[in-house]
Image (cartoon, rainbow, N blue to C red):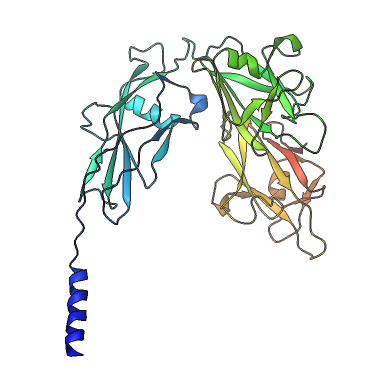
Length: 398
């Protein structure tokens, strides 16, 4: 028994002394995604992903996590790291706004009246290392990739230049527009050769006849100026995967995503049509207002998923929002409140707060009469276009 115990203890001691030594990955690490010849950046697309960097997975032959660090520099020798992002995945997206910051640091600008260039190179590489601190152990670093950045210059009077002042769209996939010209969707010239705007999009309702679709137009009220899905494909456009040819009588655009608020951008320079998160598209006191409350079930009484009411015009905030009335069966009051700052309860504006400022409020709302005098919704549960117009001093539903 003493012999067995001795052997057992000796075995445990040996296991504790095992040392793993990192080994270089024979394949190294390198980017696997394809890159554009150039990246044209405009203010309207600041929130969009400019490029998703993808690289191969490395194996250092040690039982520990691998950390990847995407590095960017305005100098080819990486004498300074101007941007670095750590991740445990083998890909990461870099936004237009991040590239614009790097371009500014590199001395570029979008002002045609200055001597500063509006184009130049930004350098990227990816580093992989064992563990999380990057300071110890083995690491691999990819070859450097240079991106040609172009800042879309403003015209001499500071106004973007496009072939048309704006593009238009109508169709049932944009329910606020519909198949008519009374309320078409508008995509303003927001950068040289770039059109963008916020829009509410819905996918096809398979339970109904026909296909929910839409089409672009270069002239308001002119059906002959329409541009359908194949017309963009024929012009070598790369179209967001959330769109496809509806294959209806006019080969319109069909939307494949979830119903919701989106920013839609038509970039005639890079020849792309993309959708992303809503973008500020006007001048307001705040970039957006926020809504929380049980009357807006997508938000609830918390800050995890508040509803954003984006600035979409001169002092006008709007968004689509799901609203529900009181649940009379349990006596609860389903209500909500506006806020001017995210996560700041002290920035709330309740029903009497707007009344005190002489607002005219839609008849489907009333003072909830609860402890905070929140907004109570009186209509049928559903999705509505909510607009807060700080100039006309109105709060309306559609």
